[in-house]
Length: 197
Image (cartoon, rainbow, N blue to C red; front, top):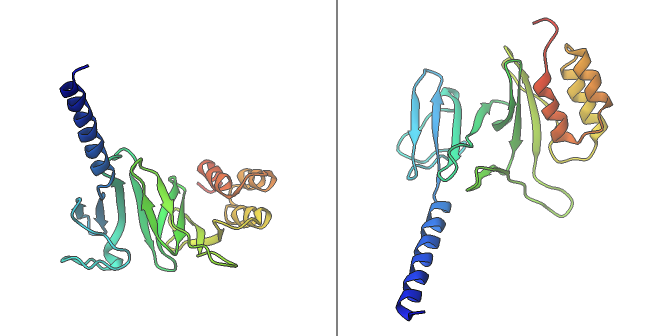
């Protein structure tokens, strides 16, 4: 094969690889939804620092309803974050008309180029940074913490979740009987239907 053709092919592959790498390294995009109905678009050059934003525009914590973010290469996988006064910023893990489940991470969150989310955890010699599940029923203002997202005590965690959703006795009983890990237990809440609805 002609050396010029080989060089041209290699150069083309190198350019495609470079473009892919640049796209994967691009920043997260999103929207800030304010309680007054305004929506602020955030592009690749904007920075959202939670809870402090050092940009030209600063929005008070109390003004923000939610933030929806996605990686520029995976806009089909948006991630929603909401402020919780007692905890901080929660990633919305499950949301139905009856219940909202948020995950709190003391170290923050990351959004991968494939759209996946990372709940950042710092490991120490005998412990790790705080991560926890928070639940809030529709119509309630405050979240209730039901347990750490990283501990192994499944039984107490299931008991706390079942006690919180006691107004759906069938699902509460199903959760108590399940041998699922914490994330699967939380996913069971998608079926939550309170009796008084």
